[in-house]
Length: 136
Image (tube, rainbow, N blue to C red; front, side):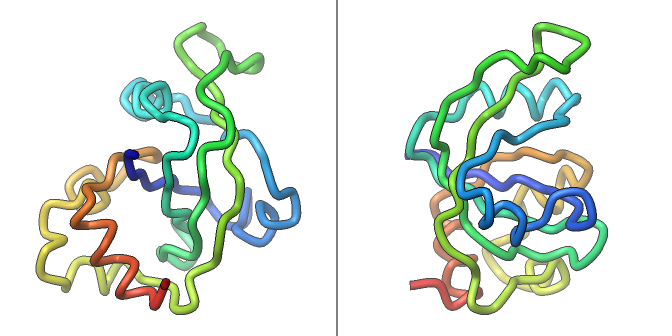
């Protein structure tokens, strides 16, 4: 299993909206590196759902329900969709400020590549963030 972090602006697509839909495609990715990350995802992989711009915090966990498939709205065949299923909310959202201050997260992609919308997370980073968010 691999771990990921996906970002969405909550005024465009929020955790609450995703929970209501249960399973929904992740749309609008137009960065080649982010698209390649989506192509690498496998069914059952887990991802943190991160609210960007407003909030700047991890608010939940989603699971890959359907692997990459062509995005019919994309200007190029390179871009894909991945369907995510809402798994569980974070009892305590973890803010970007907290992430930046936490030992063991110095090299997390969220800090190193702050503009990337879909990124890998290491197993150690995953474990640290689960603890920070009081996720059991």
